[in-house]
Amino acid sequence: MAEYATRRSSAGHIVELAAIVIAAIIVLHIIFVLVGANGGNSIVSTDADWASTLAAWFRDLFTPSNAKLAVVVNYGLAALFYLAVGRIVATLVNRV
Image 1: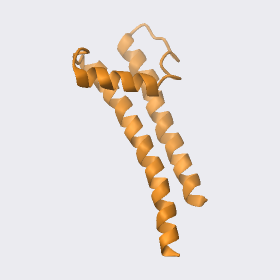
Image 2 (image 1 turned 90 degrees about the vertical axis):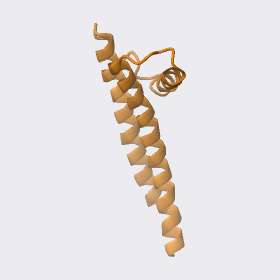
Image 3 (image 1 turned 30 degrees about the vertical axis):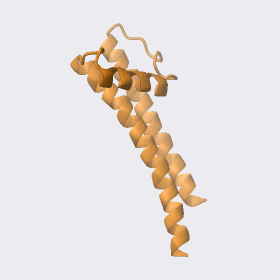
Image 4 (image 1 turned 135 degrees about the vertical axis):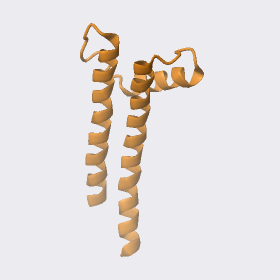
């Protein structure tokens, strides 16, 4: 019985870990934008590509005149969304 509980718990942890990694990619993009990181750098551009894909639904949700504020708000909402949904799904997986 303990093995079954461990497997069930592990599946939920994997789901939650995936959500945390996705949110971290998005937050890293926000940080790069705020500090004015060089967009030509391969790390910065790769992260920007991944974050843009992951935050696709949220990219132009709000359109403030300040570009940095737009990134913080829209991508920040995407990161929060992934964390919240990841937690909910992990809880459901652990209950099944």
